[in-house]
Image (cartoon, rainbow over all chains, first blue to last red; front, side):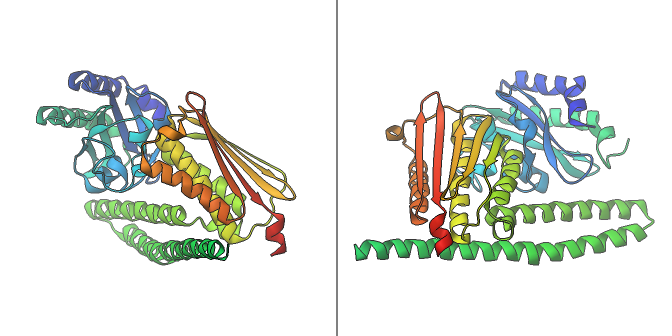
Length: 155
Length: 223
């Protein structure tokens, strides 16, 4: 599935936009591994303040999305850039969207983490257990919606 | 006077030693670790092609993808530490290559133009200019809140002039609270002074920031 197709996929848009409303966050974005090659890019965003996310390639093991893809575990940042791992510049989506807090979960396809669903706020914030659960549920809904389109995901 | 010259030499020596060490680590990552991982990748791909059981084939495919991602990250890390183009091809190709990486990392578009014929520059000086440009562009990604940057190089017989202009929020130098930013700006200026050049930074709230770098070229030719 190409980037434009995902942006036009109403199911994906609906899940992301609903999540943004339900959690009351400023930003929701979806990163996925490209059809060919190992590159991971941000395919869809809601609440974005510019279009930088479209040009950003997530680096494996770097930033919150890169770490999630390499580790397969959810992550949270409550007060960026305080107490971050690595450099400030390792977190381009936080800089591009001026986010101060975020929570993100991996999306699994074929048993491997190949995507990330991220929510963010432009203020310092700690996401509650119930908010984290909502992100997880939306992530699972997206996995179902996108399963047939992801490389190696199978029908 | 003698003391200040000596201090300048010490500063240059420290920077040069650090750059040499960075270059060594960068090469080691690219030529050593990167090459070994590539050998492992081709080996795994060969094994994968000979497998018939789907679950094993699938497992191996995931492993080859992981190695591919790691190779890519090692390559990017190596280029980030010390762009090989700087030594082999020169400043202009190194900057062009960095701009591509910069846009794909931060999403900021760079409108780039180089006027005039590129002149040879001593490696030590081209590294300094490259690092100052890198710092200026990184500062834009961190603080400027803009999607567009204009970068221009003008090659003259006697000097190279570089301008980096963003159309972001700008800042008032006296009001900068972040010590790292102030130090970063001072370091950019110092680094250019050590090469015999200059770095002038001007900014206006609401109009953006401009970084003007100049490097004398004739001096380099003579030495």
